[in-house]
Image: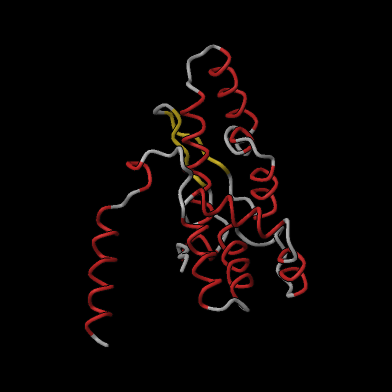
Amino acid sequence: MILFDTAATMGLWRIDVDVAGVGYTIAARPAADWLLAILGGQWGDIVPGLLPADQASELDDLLADLAVDPAELRAGAQAALAAAAGTRWWTASLLAATATRTHLAGALLMHGLNPAAVSLGAYLSAAYAAAIEHMDKVQRGRFDMDLARPPADLPAEEWFDEEAAGQGWLDAMAAAGSR
């Protein structure tokens, strides 16, 4: 089961972003803005793309002067996406693509979910719920594995959470013992 940070689903919040030790702020934006940036396929569509014009211009200048490494911008964009979505950035990216490139977008609209009026976390959480609604246990397991799988080129230290893994193991053992 893919979990979403409850706060990300409850409203539109500003997102603070750190790029090379400097703080920037993405204003509160609805899911529609985030989805367009995600689907653009470039991390720069998020950072500096979603920043206010003055901050985006500042980052563009720093990039042009080689004062900021593009990898730092990418890391800032990924962190911002994770914060806005309330889940890991790769899960958010895949779910956004799935939700907008399939029948899910229409289903969400038919149920009154307007991406211009809700947070990215709320939209993706609803998309996930709609996607799994008619899946059997095996289909849902595969879907969850696909969403949770980090990109192959992502170093383990960027995605592996030792504490969460240990708790997951304890939870599994407790569940097995209660049968």
